Image (cartoon, rainbow over all chains, first blue to last red; front, side, top):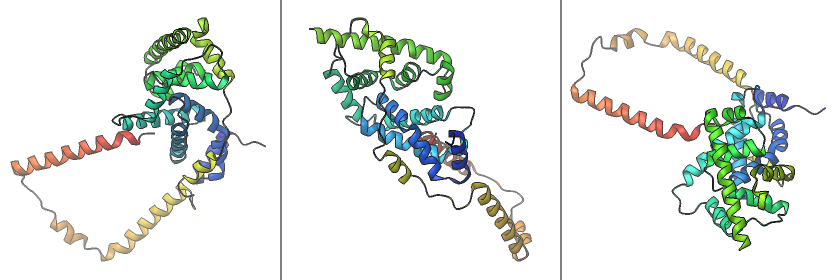
Length: 186
Length: 107
């Protein structure tokens, strides 16, 4: 029988069982790593580092996890805070990994017929031009299909801010992708 | 992308074609970075710590000069303006340090 997330979490919380936690990591790693790639302009190394830190933080703080939220939502919350901390620390550096990704984004317009890989990478690079809060809201809402309320809880921001981020983020993305299309047409 | 710039459709495409990212040693790297496994649970550790503290206190109590230490506590004290200023400065510095170092550690 396959153990549920909740059963595994209880085992980890009771005696820091590594085997149970490994199963949780294996179950959620793909979704979290993909989301973080979307958040970091498809910087695979940075996204994997942030995902690794997220899981380690989750392990250390597993006692504070409340079962009324989904484990994946709780992971996104930790991941978002990790990402914000990372960009805060990197802010003063001359060129961060994400800024490099951003530079290449402007050099790689979205093509008319996108391969699947290009679609994910170009979308991530377009998202990189949004502020981190807007980026996370857009990803959770449009890609992960979470509700406004779930996003409020994960990011600890008011409902109005979530709605504003969605409206402005979509408008900005639309503008970006249109300009890339125009550049390509020229 | 003509109307393909429609953001909702773009995300639908991305969602439907989201790749499964193979482990490629990721789980092993996470597991290697975890703190050491506990030999006893948190509850057991708390009970042992409290019991050891009570036992230690009980053993030390007869040998502990409680009366003499109480007698050393001054019944009144005065603080000079300079002393008050120094204490305020130290307290402000401590609060500033705590505020600067507390934020990045939140979950």
